[in-house]
Amino acid sequence: MRDDLPLRRAAVANAAGILGGAVLVLGALLYLVLGTATLAVFACILVGAAGITLWMWLAPDDFRAWLTGRQTRYGTASVVVTILFAGLVAAAYLLADRANLTADLTGVQRYSLNRPTLETIEQLEARGFRVRLVGFFSARKLREQEAADLLLRQYDAHGGSTIEVEYIDPDERPEVARSYGYQAGQDGSIYLVLIDADGQPLPNAMPRYVGPASEREITTALRTLVVAGRFKIYFTTGHGELDIRRTDDASISRLAVSLINAGIAAEQLSLLSVLETGIPEDASAVMIVGARGQFTEEEVRVLDAYIQRGGRLAIFTDPPQVDEGTALTNTFLEEGSPFSDYLWNEFGVRPLDALIVQMSPYYTNEFTPVINATVPHPLLSLAQDQQVIMSWVRPFELVTEPAERQTLYAREPLFYTSADSYGETGLRELMETYRIEYNNGRDLPGPLPVGVTVRRLAEGQLEAQPRIVLIGDSDLVSNQFVQNLPGNVWLWTDVVDWLTGYVQAVSFTPLSDPGLLNLVLSDQQRTAIALITLLGMPGAVLAVGAAVWWYRRR
Image 1: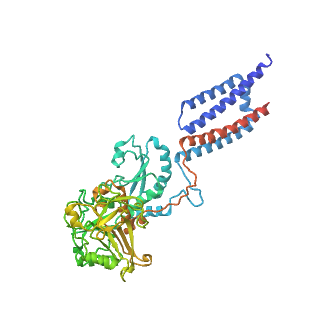
Image 2: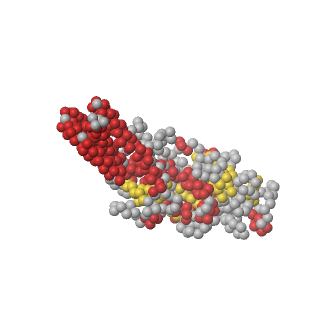
Image 3: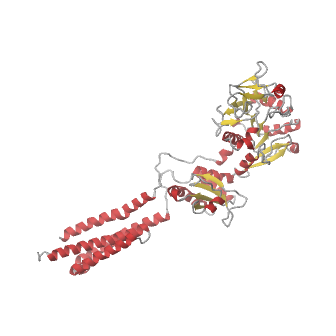
């Protein structure tokens, strides 16, 4: 037993030395991974130092021989090189991880900004804009923030001084979040704001809500800045039209504000003031909304000259009786008026002096029909299959046997009333008795068209491409109706886009592949990868080396 004691002491000493060295390496790697000296790091240092100290105390001769012996001289260089290599690999990994570096190694650059996005950034820089993309992410949205950062970092890199990125935790900085317009339920969203040379938000530019981070939405928001001033819509005045400046329920200030926020200028225009010069060349479209009086022949000629050069016109008209209990005071587009005759003779469409009565479906009564926008039409995009609410509606007549001028145009119904409806033509009797009754042979059986578009045939082959939209109600775009009725807002948006081509100018479809793997990892996944690469793999190599050393030493 006494003869075996030195051997056992030597075995314990060797095991303590190996364990101590391994634990010290573990502590060093933990420090590199965690970036701070935690309790686990200190524990590794203490255990490692204790193991080496035990080796020195139990087998001082072995320790001295290890330091000065032939094996040490030849093995130390290998150990040092191995440690240096492992250290360099670990340091490179940690630096790359902390710098958050990314590289797109796909052959078609699927994880890089698309060419239209890069062109938009160049146009922003050329126009002298500076913008800030503000991401609102709370502690609950850290994974979403990592995903957003992969995209936003590219905008920041390509934008240079034109684009900067900022992240705000709405829970920790609620006052700052509210100053950007942040609202509850928008955690994980992006805002865009114009800034000055000092990085301060411009006082006259409202922050724009973008939504979740996506290249489509961010670039579309940037493009609205690029096209600012390129689109302009004129609203006629002088005939009792709805006002784009007043904020009461019967006006259309909400829609005017929506145009301005999208970068589309909105301005009122009196046709009498441009009888000699014509409608301005910068007009993207002209809109007549809720007119009550007739247009003169001179005003009609101004509109005709504008349309023939490729102008775009929207008419929101109402029936002769525009509300319950009112007189027949609306003479706009009444039968035989200059404008009504022009629309019929040139385009083969005209409003009828009738009032839609729809038994179902309706909103509040038979005079507020619910119109289902189900007719396939190139104008309908957002409003397709949506419900549009109208009030006191006028139907249209389309020519069945077009004359020579009328054959140049395509007339396409936009939507119809339901089959359970009719057009009341006895308006005076209705006004006096308020009795809803269909009179066969006098009234117009439904369904009836209450929205029509007109465009040139083969317009893609023509230089001048006029377009006209006629809708038999102006209330549907008033402040009262667009405030709580999304279908009406979608229809307005579709009308503006079909006339001006705005959406095509500001939006694009980025290159994408839904089958691609998600490159965003959670914190737990990244930690697991770091532990495997920095601890598991080097630890396995060290364990194999230690086993070989132990075997040869025996």
